[in-house]
Image (cartoon, rainbow, N blue to C red; front, side, top):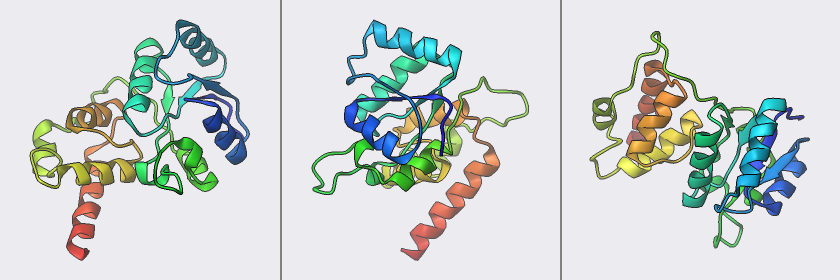
Length: 188
């Protein structure tokens, strides 16, 4: 699998995992203290071939993603759920621990944030409450599963609402994913 865009990752081990799974060029942020020089390289890469941000599913990874998105709003995003990035010893997590097939899957299901268009129905905070994604004892687990099903990553409630809008998840896609979560919980 060949990826045209540059893939932004956090470090050298992530680059190694990406290159093991696909043919692609990477830009390393060297952690969450992302420098001005790295941001300029990402901006230049976006202008030339495009960029896919593929950071770890943890706080530093989300922080890097937010910094890049603020500076280069049209970047694409690839996500992996936490459980697919945990090291074999269970002590750390990161893209570098993911299976090649999971990396390929994430990179073939990227999202580009878009300004909400008039033909997309907005998913409201009330919809999230009714779907038990906010203010519910199982809300966190349900949000994590929704992030996996929609391939938008793990989030808190506020981030979930933003990502659903940003990636223009339709009410139909949202409803189907919630129905699947409800079915899985009934069968558990």
